[in-house]
Length: 366
Image 1 (cartoon, rainbow, N blue to C red):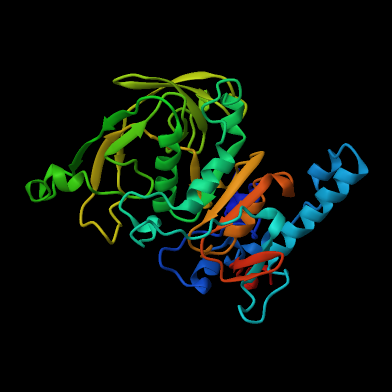
Image 2: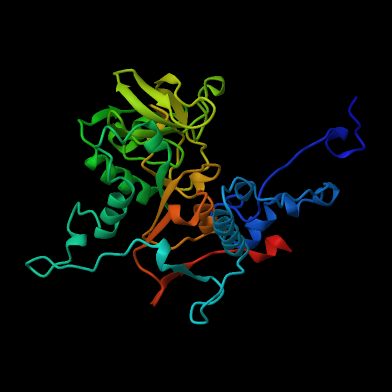
């Protein structure tokens, strides 16, 4: 029987999480509003019994003392980044953090074309820094003896925004051999809205977070990620990573490359996506029928929460802008040597590394 006088009716309620990671997203919210959206700000928080997990399981799996020492140092680095306890540069304030040289991919020197123009700003040009990152992470992408399911499961590139993710995915897809398959969505708006006012050509240009684009370009052999919970029993959940086996007119044949269902073959159909209607950018609810997947050569740092890879590249064309992003990026790998960052526009450069920003809302730890 439920007890109306007890929180949650007297039922045991278990929460787990890490406040060093990315906090609840409050659209255009201030740090105070973001912290206010956290469970710690609830009047029920003092009623929770708090248990802290302090034993590093990765260190326990170390095969020798040297490896254990390296893991211990990396673990401490993660805690310093997550809690904002790292060394700072007075010129940049408490948010400035130095990325050591051994964790960096060297940013190429700016070059000019014969006419004196920076080649990076030419229409359709891929920045040299991005090219360097792609080459570092996907050098063997067209080697069939190396580029198997495990190869793609164990590597990814992280960045801060969806726009940059799209650019990276397009750049890597160009490197992957094979012909691209184009899938176009069917778009409409709710029946009670001014349907005739928004033509198809207008709806096709709409891009909303969490909804695939009108034009989805895919290649056989490419990694993809689920954008919706389609069939949890089959392992098709939001965030599941797969690799394309065949591209058919009405379904995508793929294999799951991570998790308990690794190696399982699945067929993915088109589904209907409906925008939440709360968007400040579009005065309508969009209905889009499209495959619930996106290319997964790269993903946003936010999307990477919960993922673990063996090789990770962090591409920062702009610095991290919210609490926990740098911590999440660093903690996706199991050792320091598996992490490489390329910072396009460092806040400061000095011998031994470069500086970028690490946003930490320290009030959340109080």
